[in-house]
Length: 446
Image (cartoon, rainbow, N blue to C red; front, top):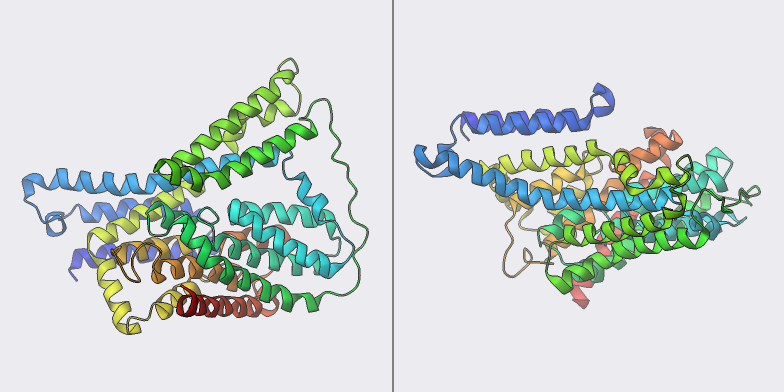
């Protein structure tokens, strides 16, 4: 490894460490990721001829082409995320998720636990796991008054959200990345990862139910009746089915048209936008009404752009490591150390994803291992499907290991230690059981 390559690696590792310690250093990880990206590529430009395999006269054109290629690849994921986040925000702000609270109401603590687990699992397969976690915690606050019980439910929400996102091509950022790059297909990942993901949720739910006893206090009875300044019940349901149904339609759209997934998500966003504009037509004479502020043009300002910029910084920094050959070398080393056992490699990545962000881990693997025409590294091969499962489900083992865990930690004030003592061991059991289930599927069924 040359001194320049070593400098790029050090810059990346230092930036990565700062991202992992965001809660300690109190600096937004998006700022760090962008700075890390620019530093890596700036160091690359000190001697680009060493990496590009071209003459000094043609090196600038080659570098520009490489950056534009990587940026174009990253943009497909970024536009998909922006569209999906906007759709979910529109559905939420217009009361589309009110039915979730009604569907979950019960007096039995264990009954509620299973309802929460299944609803979170299903919603996170359609929405992203971060949004699903927020929705479910808000619902729990209406249904469970005792904080000690609510923490148990919240821990299960983290597990179920990550498990539900692992088998869906649109349920987690990492699966979106793999799907966008053509490493997994919607049909393959749903067919082969549904049962392992379900097992990784069901086993922890079964274990956690023994922590709950008795009946719940009376549930919140807040009415969802319409007011003259809001959408009607029928219009709210229409927004929900257009938004959530549209997200389900995206894989079908890709299959029918061959267009990349972000085109499908932008189609759904445009349909939801048009529908809500028509619904709010009768409010245009009431500029002070609450509903007026829930139009898509205003809700666009609520999108978390720092998250989008973080992903861009991470993906482009990883692409620099790919250009200098670091990822390829690391991939060869992992293969040698594991004896070519994909379960060991991806299982290790899953455990690491409980400590550090799974986005750069998956991005790094995408750069380390090339897509093969056949075998374990082909589309829907064992390696890519295991990577989708392990990176998604593995983040549940620590509360800081996933976006869902971090947001639940903040909303319910769950400590790292409490989660480690009460939830982590169930998440680990589910993680290993799911991997075993996948091995059985691949050995005896597929």
